[in-house]
Amino acid sequence: MSEVTFIHLSHTCHVCKTATFRDKTRLREHLSEKEDITIEAPKSGKRRINKNIVFIKSSELNEYARQGAVIVSQHACPGCNDSFDELDDLRIHIDRQYLAFIDESYSVMASAPIPPTIMPHIASILDTDDMDKMPMIKKPKTTAEAITRLYGFHTDSGESSLKSQPKMIGGILESIGLKAYTMFPNTEDECYSVSTETQLPQIMMACEKKGISVVPCVSSEVKCDEDDSKNKVEINDGYIQYLISTGKINTAPLLADRYREVTESQLELLNEDWNSGFHLRAVCTQLLAGCLLIEKDEVLLVNCIELYSRSKHQDIHFERFNRAPSSSSVPTGNGTYETINICNIDLDNSHRLIIGSNIFSGLVTSSLRLDSENLEPELGPSTYHFHPTTSTKLFIAYSSSKKANVILVKKSTQINNYDKFSQLRQLRSNFTIPTTYCLSRCLSRFTDNLHMRPYTIFTAFCAEGDELSDVKFGSSIMRFIAAVVFRQEKTFSCKQLASIAPPIEKTTYVFIQYKKILELGSVNDTITIFGNLALEGILCAIAEKITPPLKELNSKTAKKIANRIKSLN
Image (tube, rainbow, N blue to C red; front, side, top):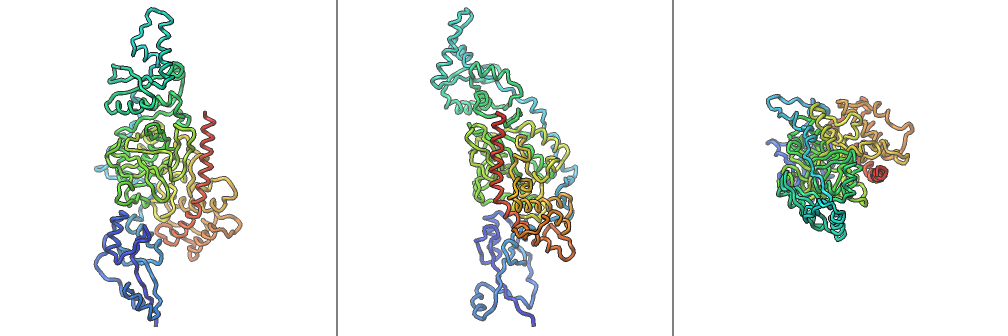
């Protein structure tokens, strides 16, 4: 007679891993309300009868225990009759069955054709010619010019003493902390005034809301230097240009690029449904790479950004959040831009800087404050040096806009041709689901090289140092799996994987996990990637092991960026 197995089913949330409920219905309600995961109730019907398995209710546990029964505890799926020994196995099951469809014909690198009748006209939505027509910024007057016009000095008589009075008064104003500025109510008129330097930003912002351009005056020496300079950075914002002209912003990392505040057509593109074409993910990523975020005197260069779709079917790593608005980067409509939200979110022990649209959330993973020499570059999931508000402005680089337009026209799902692995996001789970391998990471022109980009589990292989051999081997395994997916293959052989292993067998953690992968193909030498729960568990273990050392690697990279800036200055 076969031995009977006694099973007790628990209904535990696979996200928070602490909340346990009486039945599937209450677990589904919790997932919907707290974790934003909707799972439909299972269709009517009873579990298939197995005489060798007895399911025990919670109220019956003590009775069976007194009878000496060995009870196995399993985690029940809230949407079907499956159950699992480990909570992580339940998570993988839910992610695969309810949060992402693994279509046999799905291709990570392909651009799925859309019927012409529903294809939106977006081929020319990103008109880079607009950058050439960037509104001319009013050139600053010298303080002496402003004083001459403000106080009515006339120098027609040619007397040298009279000519020197405006310069003398200008010097006095600057010595006591007053600043002259020009106001342009329209394209023809101009008027002048003075204020304290601390009040000037508030004046400029207040005037901007009324459509009045304010340009601070500069000294004669600064104006001469500005007129003689070549290949200088251009930003269509009067106050930022003033900060540049007075040396308060380090423009060296901008590489003489031009910046324009995000346009309506670009905002439209950043909110275009990715179902219209998989290439839109790459377009949006490239467009935001190297952008500037400006909050009053804080000017931040975004050196690296990773995009995550809001659709659970397009991206298994979609943004999960509670019902509280503060935990979401979804645009609220009350900021500078109705369809873009620039905010901080505290999540998973990190202080994240997010650029969010209605379609995606963009995580900043490398940034640099240009207005302070004392703040080091930040690499990784946390950004502490920038404090966005609803008034934060977004400026797009001309170079990024031009590259994004090329991707848009070609409908390419790849951002650049020279390094696919650097376009993969820093992740720690769901390595057996196709959307993990979408190319959604891009760098600014300044840091787009092997030495200044933030490390991920896919690029740690390139790190310097023999002491990182286990980390590099783990990274090479992750790259191997990604390369198989890039080739649009679903399986690989143990022989192929063995080709990347070190020649001498080791007893390190990653090498042990590598041996476990080989054991999965011990029968026919072939291992399937998508939907393979055993492989998923091993790859997650490798990712968890090699992720902590990335922090130290990124610290070294931050120093390289700082040294590069010093060499440019």
